[in-house]
Length: 288
Image 1 (tube, rainbow, N blue to C red):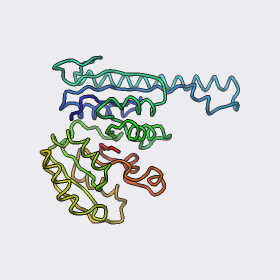
Image 2: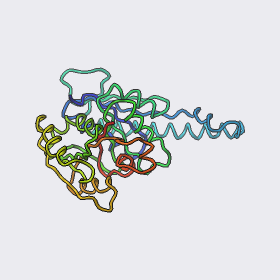
Image 3: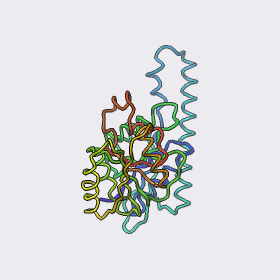
Image 4: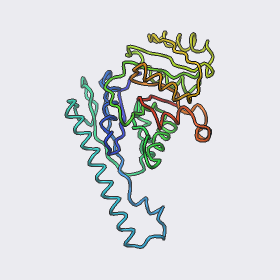
């Protein structure tokens, strides 16, 4: 398995460059291709929420305002793509090209971002999305969840404030779940190229043998040498604890399963996945 096709979702914000840098880092070892996708919101969709409460003039003004915002975001997303491709010497192509280095295509469409990403992501090896941290609405989180649950592909979630150019030091947050296994499998191309791999876990979360002999042996058979980093539980939330330790260890990437529990349980009780969607200080490669 390799990451030959990468879908990078640009939002038209200041962090789009970080999304493209992460997509470049994940595609580079395989001379992969990056499809940079920007989904324009459809102003007409607001009709479903306004109903008969607005007058014709007020509605026209709202649509005009939304159209201007949509156009501005599309312009900024394209500018980020052009800047990234020019600075990195990325060849722009529409079809596979033999012997090429990392290549890219600009893709722009109109619709609901989460639905477009869930659909188009099915035919990519990995989806790269910005985290939902600090967003005033739920669009980013909805896109991440639909990508995870409907595309069947691994999702790389990128922090808004951290640019990454390579994934040399990787932490695996391990809890022995089938989702964690899928995430490790999806991350195998990166794990094989990593200089350091640490399996991080909290003692009460998993069985010692499953970490030391199970996952470690599995990774070894794939040519990956990993160190076991076991932590005793404390007052911190598990996701916060593991992320703190990964940051201290100067990791470039976290690999973890997504939503080992139901989304409803995560919402009510809190969970590692939800914490990572909102608070992650490092890029997170996840799978469900």
